[in-house]
Image (cartoon, rainbow over all chains, first blue to last red; front, side, top):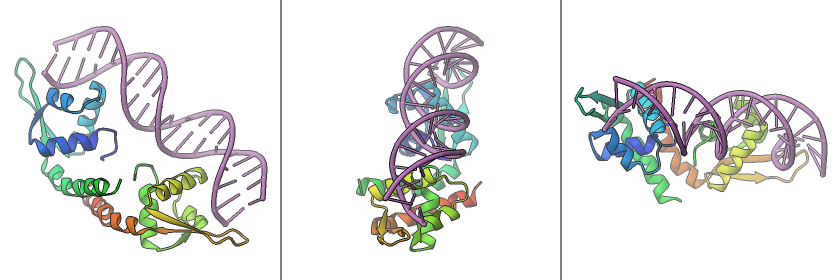
Length: 88
Length: 88
DNA sequence: CGGCATCCTTTCTGATACTG
DNA sequence: CAGTATCAGAAAGGATGCCG
């Protein structure tokens, strides 16, 4: 579920900021391509780790946030990150 | 560090059994190729998550086990596995 | 038995162009 | 702004043959 170059960065980003627009995520993930951002967001959504809200406005406005399930997973990912930070 | 198709299976296997020979690992990882087994073992060793012992016998005998560092990491991986088992 | 080298296939990722 | 489609390259993985 968390396999993919940018999935952890996305999840951690949504953990730090409860709700983010697509463009904001794109800016924050320095180096990510439009394609991978969308693709990973779709997969995370399919795995119900994040939720997507389309406000149906113009100009377009879509926001993403962690789902309850995602929030359950985060502590584990944070522990993993701690390990990788402590060790090289 | 744990990226790679078989790294988690290998680590979990070495967690269940403190010390295993190459051939035993190979048998237990149904489907793994000789190449990936060796490659992943080398990488895990380079990351100091496992340790390798060459007994210098004939016929060849090499065993692998979790390092202290590996044992530190395992609880995190187990938590992750629990999550993936609970949810799909 | 444990491992290396080579070649080939699959999977993943990125660049670019285009849409409502 | 958010997203899709297509293509090309990189990376990961597997099959096979060979060695001490």
